[in-house]
Image 1: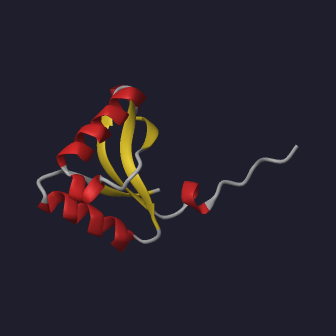
Image 2: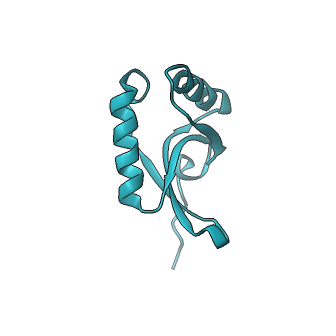
Image 3: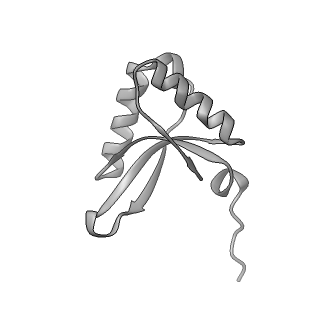
Length: 93
Protein backbone atom coordinates (compact mmCIF):
# COMPACT_ATOMS: atom_id res chain seq x y z
CA UNK A 1 0.00 0.00 0.00
CA UNK A 2 1.43 3.36 -0.97
CA UNK A 3 0.88 6.58 0.92
CA UNK A 4 -0.38 9.46 -1.22
CA UNK A 5 2.14 12.25 -1.61
CA UNK A 6 0.74 15.63 -0.56
CA UNK A 7 0.76 18.30 -3.23
CA UNK A 8 2.93 21.41 -2.90
CA UNK A 9 -0.24 23.37 -2.08
CA UNK A 10 -0.73 21.21 1.02
CA UNK A 11 2.87 21.21 2.20
CA UNK A 12 4.76 24.14 0.68
CA UNK A 13 4.64 27.85 0.74
CA UNK A 14 3.08 30.19 3.24
CA UNK A 15 -0.38 30.96 4.59
CA UNK A 16 -1.91 34.03 6.20
CA UNK A 17 -3.68 33.22 9.47
CA UNK A 18 -6.68 35.41 10.18
CA UNK A 19 -7.98 33.92 13.44
CA UNK A 20 -8.04 30.86 15.68
CA UNK A 21 -11.31 29.42 16.95
CA UNK A 22 -12.44 26.45 19.07
CA UNK A 23 -14.34 24.67 16.27
CA UNK A 24 -13.97 24.35 12.50
CA UNK A 25 -17.41 25.93 12.07
CA UNK A 26 -16.37 28.98 14.12
CA UNK A 27 -13.18 29.28 12.05
CA UNK A 28 -15.21 29.31 8.82
CA UNK A 29 -17.71 31.80 10.28
CA UNK A 30 -14.85 34.05 11.39
CA UNK A 31 -13.44 33.98 7.86
CA UNK A 32 -16.83 34.83 6.32
CA UNK A 33 -17.17 37.78 8.72
CA UNK A 34 -13.70 39.05 7.80
CA UNK A 35 -14.43 38.50 4.11
CA UNK A 36 -17.54 40.70 4.46
CA UNK A 37 -15.64 43.35 6.42
CA UNK A 38 -12.60 43.42 4.08
CA UNK A 39 -13.93 42.49 0.62
CA UNK A 40 -11.18 44.37 -1.23
CA UNK A 41 -8.59 42.02 0.29
CA UNK A 42 -10.45 38.73 0.89
CA UNK A 43 -13.36 38.59 -1.58
CA UNK A 44 -11.63 36.20 -3.99
CA UNK A 45 -10.05 34.00 -1.30
CA UNK A 46 -11.09 30.59 0.00
CA UNK A 47 -10.69 29.66 3.66
CA UNK A 48 -8.32 26.94 4.82
CA UNK A 49 -9.13 25.55 8.26
CA UNK A 50 -6.13 24.00 9.99
CA UNK A 51 -6.30 22.09 13.28
CA UNK A 52 -3.68 23.07 15.86
CA UNK A 53 -3.03 21.30 19.14
CA UNK A 54 -1.80 23.89 21.62
CA UNK A 55 -1.25 21.41 24.45
CA UNK A 56 -2.66 22.70 27.74
CA UNK A 57 -4.51 25.49 25.91
CA UNK A 58 -6.48 22.93 23.89
CA UNK A 59 -7.29 22.37 20.23
CA UNK A 60 -7.84 25.38 17.99
CA UNK A 61 -8.74 25.73 14.33
CA UNK A 62 -6.89 28.37 12.36
CA UNK A 63 -8.77 30.35 9.74
CA UNK A 64 -6.22 30.85 6.96
CA UNK A 65 -5.90 31.90 3.33
CA UNK A 66 -3.30 30.68 0.87
CA UNK A 67 -1.14 28.92 0.23
CA UNK A 68 1.20 31.47 -1.28
CA UNK A 69 4.21 30.48 -3.37
CA UNK A 70 6.46 32.94 -1.53
CA UNK A 71 6.66 34.56 1.87
CA UNK A 72 6.62 37.97 0.16
CA UNK A 73 3.23 37.21 -1.45
CA UNK A 74 1.78 36.21 1.92
CA UNK A 75 3.22 39.32 3.58
CA UNK A 76 1.73 41.48 0.84
CA UNK A 77 -1.79 40.16 1.50
CA UNK A 78 -1.35 40.44 5.27
CA UNK A 79 -0.10 44.05 4.96
CA UNK A 80 -3.07 44.90 2.72
CA UNK A 81 -5.41 43.45 5.33
CA UNK A 82 -3.70 45.37 8.15
CA UNK A 83 -3.91 48.60 6.13
CA UNK A 84 -7.67 48.00 5.83
CA UNK A 85 -7.93 47.56 9.62
CA UNK A 86 -7.65 43.79 10.01
CA UNK A 87 -5.22 41.52 11.84
CA UNK A 88 -3.24 38.59 10.52
CA UNK A 89 0.06 36.78 10.66
CA UNK A 90 2.15 34.94 8.09
CA UNK A 91 3.03 31.30 8.80
CA UNK A 92 4.98 28.63 6.98
CA UNK A 93 2.52 26.10 5.63
